[in-house]
Image 1 (cartoon, one colour):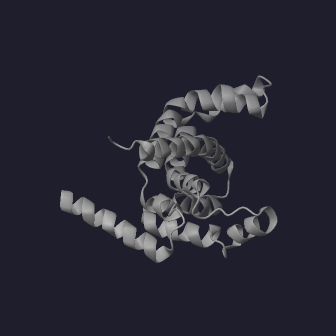
Image 2 (cartoon, helix red, strand yellow):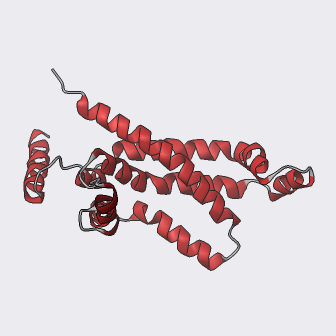
Image 3 (cartoon, helix red, strand yellow):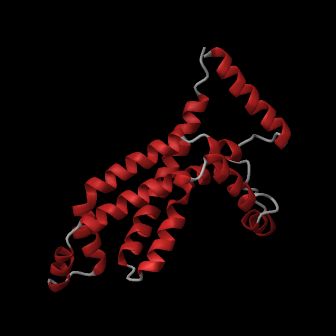
Amino acid sequence: MMDWSPVFISMKTASLSIFITFFVGLFVAWLLVKIKNDTLKIVLDGIFTLPIVLPPTVVGFFLLYIFGVRGPIGKFFIDFFTVKIAFSWHATVIAAVVMSFPLMYRSARGAFEQVDSNLLDAGRTLGMSEWKIFWKVLFANALPGIISGGILAYARGLGEFGAVTLQDKQGLSLWQFIQKWLQEIWGTLLIM
């Protein structure tokens, strides 16, 4: 009988990661569209899209460095909350969020930039608050691009292997984990 637990864990991880990625991606895209300084916009855009151009294992090692026991964020969480982030299910969600974020962010930003600014100005002249303008005008007109970004981000979170695998090694030493990972890859290659 086939073990379905990896499928369920992947679905659970991708579902939580898309929930986080969707709202954070929308917010960051909206902020970058509103920024007037082109230099700052270019720098931030480069930083936010970096995970899509870097190899997933590089992003995974960077996350290990940041969230590891001796890393700045990992040490903070251990010292103040006695919570170890690295090599836990929460770390896999963080890795999936980081890897899928650029797809949601870029799609939402592109969709927001396509909305005619005259529609936003018309909402302001009608006395709408910025919150209402965002949801009733900007979000409503950008919805197809936002939905496509959400689907792409979910698929990336579901299919991500490199960065997520490095975050969830299930209590093995790093050397044991690398050996097990190489054995799994070698076994897969032999089957093919």
